[in-house]
Length: 320
Image (tube, rainbow, N blue to C red):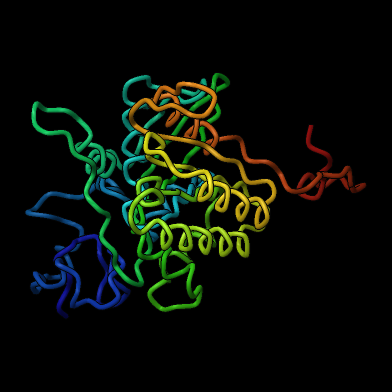
């Protein structure tokens, strides 16, 4: 049987390891060659011992991570070029510089290579500064996920996943949630613990600001239909670029009507001025990250319901 050249992939028995819709779209499958059964799991005679590569995780990679506990998924949603990837890169650089987030220490990542792929563009190397490249759209694919583990002072470990998803998914999802090419957005919204809608101040102040405003309002309204009580934030990205009071008011009104408990942030990688204060860019980005990684709130109350039995398996009660 013809096997995939990616030794961690079970195609054609199972689907593509990278999540491609057809095997013909996968670069590993195109390079496939006949491989005897005993060679599976090796590369050039070397045994693959780790269940991860360091790159962004796909949906099939999550089994080994979630085996040690529930991972919190943070969804960044917004139009093309809104600044989602730049937020991710800034968060990674913050953790790299400080080693902690809101009092909790960095405790590893299975996707350091993936983080570097989005953050390297923000590092100044003497050349002209540039932003991370646009995240490519792949219709029907689950988003690439970046992993971060934090440990608090008591030793408790928490895993977080951040989805780096193309804006085209969310623009399509906002227009028609059941569309075939919105599958990636649906996958993310259904599973996310925290939803962050990113507003592009540059687009909202540009020549197509009317279209940008309408698209953002549609995305907020669609998010309201699916947020199911989860924490939702509206982040005004590129906040150093001024937006007219009329547009800001229209977007804010839509957000509050659709999701009354939505919180708002202003963020930029450079310093900026709000109506009331001067804001340090790095601090604004850190504030969003700390909110996104807030402790999860339980949506239920545990009651004391003891059972009179000597069998320890059936004995349970209130958690205190």
